[in-house]
Length: 163
View 1 (cartoon, helix red, strand yellow):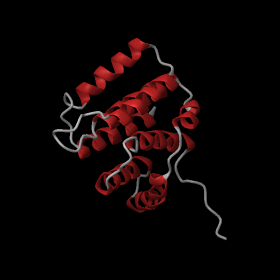
View 2 (tube, one colour):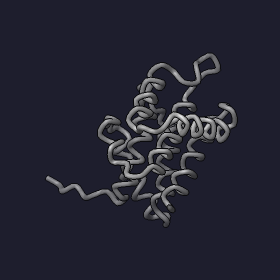
View 3 (spheres, helix red, strand yellow):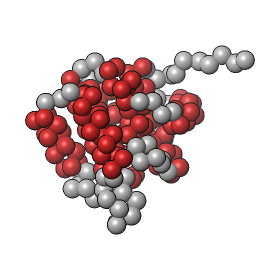
């Protein structure tokens, strides 16, 4: 039996990734193309060299299929800034999932998991409103496409992890 090595990313990075993935899976699907873009971009956030990025990308592949409940992940957030960051990422993830022009931007499953996230984060309603407005602006008034949202999420992860 092979020994599983610990992840090469920090527990904090892993928790943020798992929360984003839990929200991305809210509607029961994660397109291969979307997953590939997420893996590529997140590996660039978590590793600096091409070789280490490929290694991290392979490692993260296994985490895409894990479905961990938000109730286990959210309590691991230690600061107000992390909670606000996760709320923004969550809003952006669920706002980007409409696959056809006729489909609601945020479907019922996504709305339910987002509301659960809001409750678990226990942020003041004023903070939630501020974060949602900021996310709407960043998403270009809800006109973002899949890759654009992943690029935005990647940028925000990179900036947040610098702190």
